[in-house]
Length: 205
Ligand code: Z5A
Image: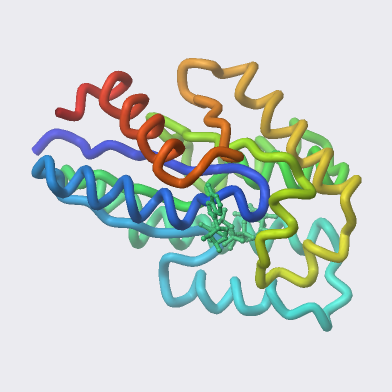
């Protein structure tokens, strides 16, 4: 059984990642791929529990503690969901992954990039996506599309601008893996570009 394909969707809040992950998965299934759609933080019962902790705006969460919670959730998710699915030859479509940690906890919150990278590498055991679709969107437009993360939303526009810039730097550093998609367009236009990138980059059809 050949190893499956690992695709991640990244981007600022409200960029349409969840919607596009489902649409892409449906298109891939129509082409005969065995697909799982999953998300971070979450995707596994323990990791979903960590997600609930992270979403609780009452905790005065230290940024290092926050980083380690995201990474604990990821380690569990990779070991129990993503690696087994890839080993079975499935395509994994994941709503956020390591690039979110680099963008939010390093570019956004200011933790040193090299240290965040090293800890992330430890959490994933070195697993990296084959392809990342970065849905790029003006921060104020994204924040207007209602979210459920009060902790992140109250960090303010400047924080979210740094996150967006962080994502764009990651794309510039790895243009083969990270493909930037303009997410300000209507849903179907975004979906069509995603299909074209996936089709061309991974020879899906
Ligand atoms: N986080 C972190 O800090 N570190 C990490 O390592 C990880 C995550 C993994 C969880 O993200 C939070 O954790 C997030 C980053 C942080 N912080 N925040 N905020 P999440 O993915 O659960 O939350 P989110 O990014 O806020 O997701 P979201 O609001 O659900 O956005 P989305 O998935 O990108 O969009 P959507 O749900 O598909 O769409 C949102 C709305 O916009 C919905 O009404 C759609 O119908 C609408 N939409 C979508 N696309 C369009 C277009 N093209 N036009 C018009 N309307 C659209």
